[in-house]
Length: 201
Image (cartoon, one colour):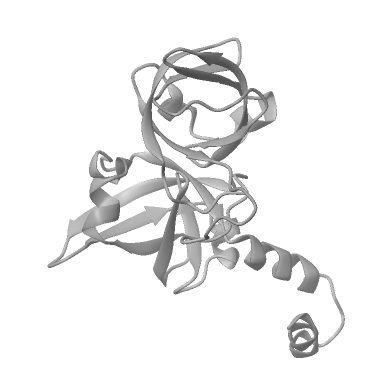
């Protein structure tokens, strides 16, 4: 589990034979879970200047691989430990879909970002709900048929890769896991939805 607060911006040193080597100040232990751009991976080798993880074929099918090329910067977040504060929201590191940044607009004291994604996951995205973009915990402001709008404060914008994102940039999206679970519980059910929701709470 993660909470979407980025520890560091690492740099991809190499990506070959499914092995992703990352230069970073943070040093995990072998076997530790670590999120790289929001993807939960396992540290398999430690170097003096960073660490290595391995991406399974299944993982490579669902993430934005163009952001894992040598020289690219990536978000790094170690897994939560029991007793840690959760200042963002609970994130599993399981990517639901790829998004495309359509707009980045500076407002008076924040940045509005519009991201297009697969309409199939829009049902899991709610206004004022939580979402993870490349592992960053954010709040959704508006939801449309195939896109949504985020408002990002300057601190988050300047201390993550958002400050470097360009239009049509591809990003990893993880929707709120509670929304996914509730939807799964309710679909294909003949029971009254309101009764199911009351039972859930």
